[in-house]
Length: 192
Image (cartoon, rainbow, N blue to C red):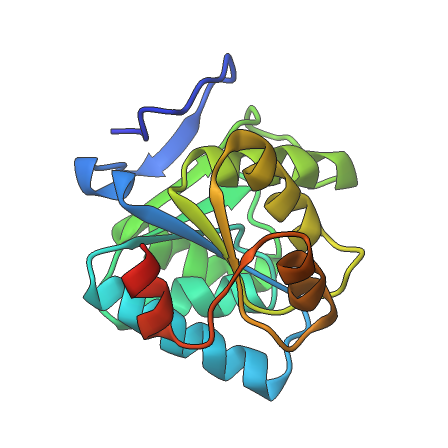
């Protein structure tokens, strides 16, 4: 089942299964080039979120997204990848094995018809869909001018809570704009 607040005329293309428990989902997003700290934080937050019954949603991009999906699977949890391409177009292709693992442990979702290429404007639409499927958005690390900020802006516009881990250009800026600062996974769980 999809989150009840999902209001879109977009057809959803799904491989795998969306379940009722996926209503308790949190998006974990960030830079494609994470620092060692960013990688570690992603693993720590996702492990704790999975332990507390959350489904992890991300965009299957390199970096934080990939780490979030892999950590959710390795922790025995569910994960949903939202693509900026047709459901039959694996991007980045290096995530081919991850793509099939996500299908077995959750779902791969797209708002685009088969064959749609992963072009820039599609990722903005993908970010909107990530937000529509999530109860909250957690930003781990990023730059101020990035898709990460786009996702957080969509969340704010939709009334979806935005949490950010301080210590990067994007997250510090988001906190200054009203995102909730979270230092540890327990902080986030307590707030949720």
